[in-house]
Length: 225
Ligand code: SF4
Image (cartoon, rainbow, N blue to C red; front, side, top):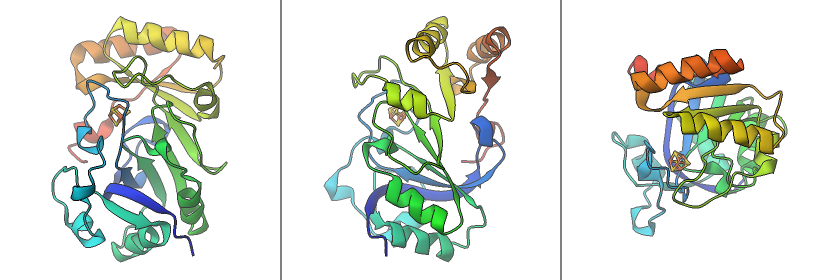
């Protein structure tokens, strides 16, 4: 029995469109809550945990639009829901919000014991608590309004670093971060913000110059969640 609870905003199956796992059928579990406050965040509905917006698991599954509603589910309930939904994907991506505000070890352990591979996507501003085998994607959010620092422990734990890019300043921030935390071998992905052409051109040029990789959010080009 694994009764640790998590506040879930949504739960769906799709294709991972970013980073090393691009193209991988995946179950996404989006946690509620994030204080980082990126100005260009495309999931602002996950920021606040408003008690009056708690809903049942049934209502969570019936959600058809992005809302601030969330459901408090145990690991066992999450595993049961995956079976009930007849999801076929064997890879689970835990995202947010900022999932590392909570200890993800019980959730990842439960999923891995049930035969899933696990991945988390985090801003790198909270201590990463998860299993050793979990794939960790750190997407460092530098100088955001929330005032959080990128943790050295997060940069070191990262299996990949995925950096949102729109301006030269973002490239400079990334280079400083890699230097500061002595990250030399972790794969780096540049991700143009909002599919803007200028951002994409900048990302392509910077990838070639620095031997980084391009992550273009494939799901947004093919029109899936
Ligand atoms: S860390 Fe992620 S969820 Fe939080 S504000 Fe930034 S982009 Fe949005």
